[in-house]
Image (tube, rainbow over all chains, first blue to last red; front, side):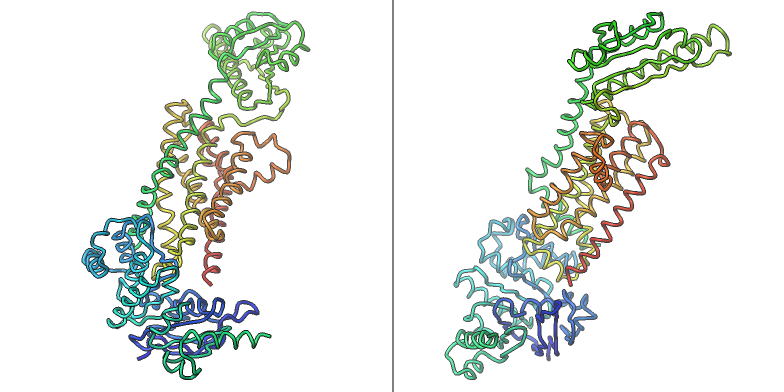
Amino acid sequence: MSVIKVENLTKHFGNFIAVNNITFQVEKGEIFGFLGVNGAGKTTAMRMLCGLSQPTSGSGTVAGYDIASQSEDVKKHIGYMSQKFALYEDLKVWENMRLYAGIYGVPRSEIPAVIDRMLAALGFESEKNTLVKELPLGWKQKLAFSVSIIHRPEIVFLDEPTGGVDPAARRQFWEFIYKAADEGITVFVTTHYMDEAEYCHRVSIMVDGRIEALDTPARLKQQFSVASMDDVFTKLARKAEGGEQ
Amino acid sequence: MKTFFSFVKKEFLYIFRDIPTMIILLLFPILMIILFGFGINTEVRDTRVAVFDPSRDVATQELVNRLSASEYFVIDRYLSDISEAEKVLKKGNVGLVVVFSNNFNENMQRGSASVQLITDGSDPNTASSLANYATAIINQLAVDHAQLATNVGGNNSRLPIINCQFKLLYNPTMKGAYNTVPGVLGLVLMLICTMMTSISIAREKETGTMEVLLVSPVKPITIILSKTAPYFVLSLVNLATTLLLSIFVLKVPVAGSLTLLVGLAMLFIFLCLSLGVLISIVAPSQIVAMLVSAVVMMMPTILLAGLIFPVENMPLILQVIAQILPAKWFIEAVRNVMIKGVGISAISQEVLVLSGMAVMFLAMSVKKFNKRIE
């Protein structure tokens, strides 16, 4: 069952084509890597999927809702984590949880239980009353992720969720992602780290607004006859540079 | 609604955890009132007065005595020639010159006498206070005389008119006393509503939380309303402190309707909040939001809205610029309600302009906001 279906999705900004006719599907429970250099159109595509931006042409559904006409319904069924780990720094850990639970309409009577469960899952029981600004970056990241799935969304969008975090913390973070996927949450993730691309079930690579490659990491490596995703990426990026000349 | 309250709660937590900012917000109006208020009040006491009196009759003598008896004036000297008036003012020997007309008493009995007050207009606030106090004393004399005449001679006597001519040297069209309280009120509300709101929304953009909020099912209007609600409450607290201080410490009473005054303040708060929201939507970061509010809005408000210099005395171009400042209209209206005690009909123009500006800012915010998401 596809939870994200996109057909010929295109976005123009004046004469500039940010997203050029992309088509893909993401299955339920899948971890879908969305790769591309800066400016390739990843963010624009993701903003359209989240209902923040109207497509110029083409269509798509997320969690069964049309991204152009039902963006408010889309928003109720997705989670979103920005690359800045957008948490309120001057609020305590549990206050952040309570706020986002309120935003996503978790019933008031259930909020304390939800907070306790999240603290336990994160191993944060002792940090319940700590201000978020006092947490180390890796902890903030884990907290931001749990907060983004506080309402058990069908899909969670992660926009470069591991930027600036050390490798150990990144690996730990991916364990969280796997756990969420096991619980049936589809994960749509953009990243710069090619080792992380290997962790995804399937990856797409965007170059200049188009999707140039889309498959499992193993088959992509086979297709380009290279040893790592890093090499796949380099080959595609070089092709794009060549095409511009 | 539930979302709205969890937001407002968060916003209050944010304000209360930032203790230095909160202290500034709550103490600022008090400081301003005390600084501006006492700065003006102390200067006016015991002003030295020069008198030019060609009549030398009972009426002029009584007037001089009354002036001298008040706490504001001390009679310093009599001038032998009118030409000395400018000299003594220029030297700063005296703050006020009182010039009586010839045959003052006789003219007053007949119904109309004139007296001229000359002050140094280069310090407009002091000059205007002096003129107001002196005029009040002179008019009281006229009223007392009329009453006396009525008691003695039956009801056929009428109120003698003393034409009080007020002449300002160096700054002839000066108006704009009692600026302190209305001015401070305008400034404080502008600071809290416009500057703090725009900074707090810009902060969410900077930290990325705004993006997360926009992806969430929360409606943009709920976000905006919940961001502005706490500052609305804070402004009301500041409004109350400012008014209480002005009434009980500065002894500036509210001459007009208190309800009208509060209503007017609410309209201005609404306008400032809309403006703050607009600035924050346009500004990419907290620093820009702060600079725009401070440099583009606060500075002109302090300088051009009649808080320090009366608008009427500025060069034409600055007067035109002053017209587009929301605070100018607010200060004008508050001054009328608070000091002159007029009703709503007398300030309808100001109310209309303020409402128009508020609606315009709000419409622009909504338009910009939608465009930005796109």
